[in-house]
Amino acid sequence: MAVTGDETESATTADMSSYQIHSPTSRLSKMMGNSPGSLPSPQELAEEASRKRELRLLKNRESARQCRRRRKEHVQSLETLLATMENQNKKLTEASKGILFIWHTRLQFSHLPLIDSCSYFNG
Image (cartoon, rainbow, N blue to C red; front, side):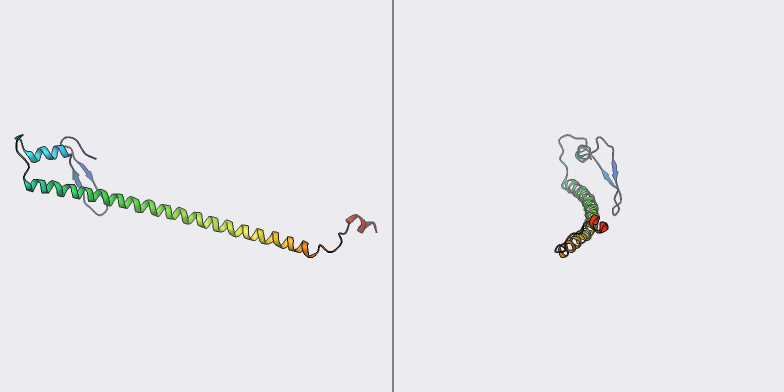
């Protein structure tokens, strides 16, 4: 996400206004000034640390937002799958009850002799 040179990139979020993201090298060179031997002041170091912290927090918020979105989609897909499986289970249970009814009916009448349809009509 770092940008080279003096270019900047705006990152916007729903709860935050835009942030300017600078490349670390361009920011450091601006902090050090034109003289190569000078070191950044404690205030400049604190500002840089604060900027890095804000950037880290911004990235963390966005990552958390995406995680919550993905989790919500996953839960919704699981709920859809659950509803489908419950419906299928209901249908299978009803079919099983029908088969058991037929089986029990045949067992109840198994002691009766089988009637040959031809002998019934032939007299």
